[in-house]
Length: 192
Length: 406
Image 1 (cartoon, rainbow over the protein chains, first blue to last red):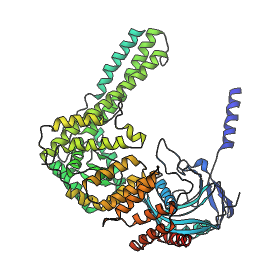
Image 2: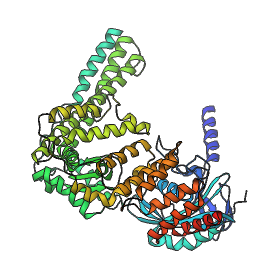
Image 3: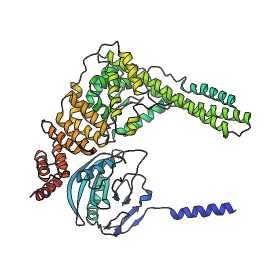
């Protein structure tokens, strides 16, 4: 009986630790990283603990394979791809050039199921008063589905702040592109 | 106890050796397909058909008609009557590899095409894969693996109980548990040994096939020698270890062993002048992209080896010097920045210099604190490629650098 009670208590304790997707309501949204954004509408939030392939958290409208908005801050020497065995993962380095940041993102995506990823429309962008970059992505998901994406990145002392949006090219990308643009434009680096 | 343990080991070794036995499937007939749907072969075909279907929509295939036609023609030249059974796909993957599935799907990595220095070398690897197909090696290996699993289970159980009866130690404990594990290890060791034998057989047949097709058989040891030298030059510890890693669980013979065996086999064969023109013609449009993919691996030693070997043979100097500069700039060791800039400058002396060499040069000057030179290089880049995907960013950089300079 004591064993049973102990087991039930242990299971109950674990249940309290469980991390589940949750609603991210419209309005100010403090990311797990060192910045916040403003969401024009409700999203579903997938915390970093339940994302096996990458660090950082995701927001999605219709499911992770249909649209995903990835928020992450990458410190010097770190990667946003979780290290798998001894795989060579691209890392961010303080002082990296804009071109190196673009390459780090495209190479990282190749390690988590995206093929033939290319950056397009690479352009300078002012992000919360700081010099950053924006660029688009085109490629294929590993099942052959054409995907598109957008990236906003800005380097700060504590690392590279990154927002990465990916969705199937057909319907899903276009249906959210404007809202994602608003979210990227709303990056607030001073938020805590 | 030690006598008993020795007996156990001898028994386990003998039985485990059986794991590789009784799997010879003979030579395939032209047009062969599994007839009965409940056979191991039919299961294997089904899996491979599924994989092929997925591959076609994966976005990982290089859809260059000239390149695919060239590789397919070469396969047919050495494969003869089996040609109609084989479908060749060039995979956008920079590893040195090719694969032949029992349903006739042949995958050829772009990394192999990048590394083959002649059509004869490429043909040898294709012949090796053809040998796996004709000799039904995939099916035989699957049977060997299944035998290993069954052998390990039976031998492990018998030995465990036997040792337990002799020692009074419960099955799964002490020596009885250890002997069961040893049986498993030996059984699978037998299956891997079988795999190595099949690889050696495929090497031997590969040489025969290219010789019969009028190609240079001495290309066989040469491509392995080049790969071995590349692995030795590698900065990637995992790749470098492949150069001389031994052990009972290797699926392939050691590369040096393969070189020695193939050198012996081809010693008495006449060398034919290597053919390079057709391979070069189909590789050229992809050379820069493939080198970029190789460089992105950040295996500086391996990349420099490949680039320098190509520079020695001549041609594509603009692309190759620029690639060399990029590797050095990424490596960033003492003196690399200057060497990278020198390599970029060398690239600009050739007509085939890629436009983005000037962007890389601009970046190198920018990091070196030379804004005027950086702005000039970036400007040349946009003159050569005004619609570059990063044109807007580069325009901003030119503005900023010009401001710093004034």
